[in-house]
Image (tube, rainbow, N blue to C red; front, side, top):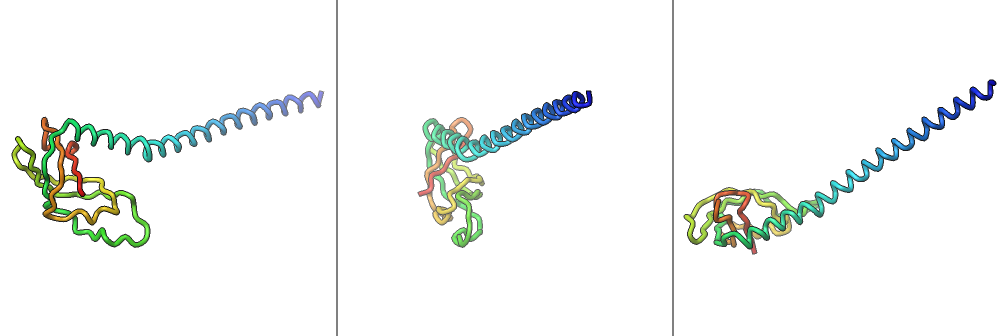
Length: 145
């Protein structure tokens, strides 16, 4: 009789251990999926989404010229040590698109860090805008060469 009680106790421990193990594996699997999904979103999906938006605006938008009026005073040329692939830069532009009055905007662009030395005041760049809403900052694309 005494052994039967211990056997029941061991069976309860075995069931609790199995349930704990299953829950632990599920939590770890969820964590792995969450991290993998986040990395996919950040490294693959979001850049492709942004590229698709830019390509769509270039295809359906109206092209013009923009003159860089203002760039930040930061010294971007000193790249000693570690640096990011892209840098967010606020650029002042004067936009001239045929059929739309010339206007000025300050817009933040995500720019390749190794190409920041291309940004110079007075430089003319290609610009694409949404002809329905030309002052919408989310729908202004530039091409700096």
